[in-house]
Image 1: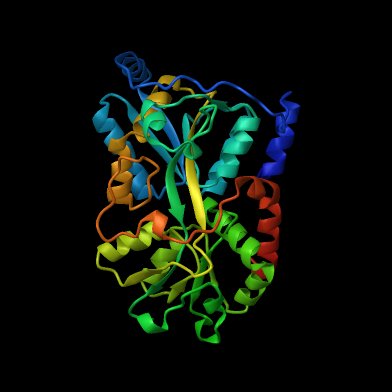
Image 2 (image 1 turned 90 degrees about the horizontal axis):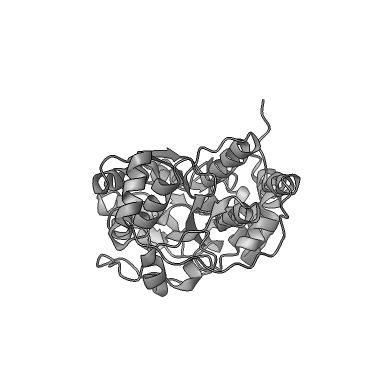
Length: 352
């Protein structure tokens, strides 16, 4: 059985390749590029794009189909899994000199730090990113761009929990009345949940999770699993998960409601990057360009119900603006340093 590579393994591997994992690189940002006719023609000659993503499958495939409709003749092959699995898969492929991925989207910024230090990413800045994105949402060297902004709130099933009885904070989840009624996703699978678990442990302490484990919390893999479990009534309350799915389920008439915890709602930004070893480099750049256009970003807002970094997108009425939500602080460098320790500590506490 092949051993799964950790972040630490990948950093060691960079050294074996003659690359310094911790070297400070200073490079000028590439010129912003539009989707020119020449790029489109070159992409059509390649005819395909391989997109590894941590987006939920339904949305990722919808995005792929929209790209194919925009650029007929280029097939978008979507490979979806949890962010941590995507990261491990790319590490395994590159350790075997397999270059299959063109563009990747993850929900863990720490992954891009490692790929960047390994020298695996190609600089590319879409024109609309430079025009309409705050600089905090793209790498100064053009090596990755934030595609979506994710939050991981608490949520509950309104058939099982009355509004006046619903938890208002993470600490409320320690009330004995929630024993056997909670569901939480696992940081070893999901980048969103890695960020959420890291941020809650940092702000509330690991003792919080020790107490939470005594509540007999149902453990699932993905950030997309927890909303599903509460929507069908398997558990009453989700500790963390994809807030956008709760919104989508509620809009579809399912009995779910979001709670933005008093301590702050965990935050994760989901970047995308073009790989230097992409087998379809022109299609990769075209896809990266289109995915960060207002057209694609509005699909993300309207259909996926996620927050966009594109300043020209428009939210539907009734959705709480990101600026109006108290957020926990994202810390990619902290996760880079502590991810394996977080996974280990979590597994020990919850015995999973």
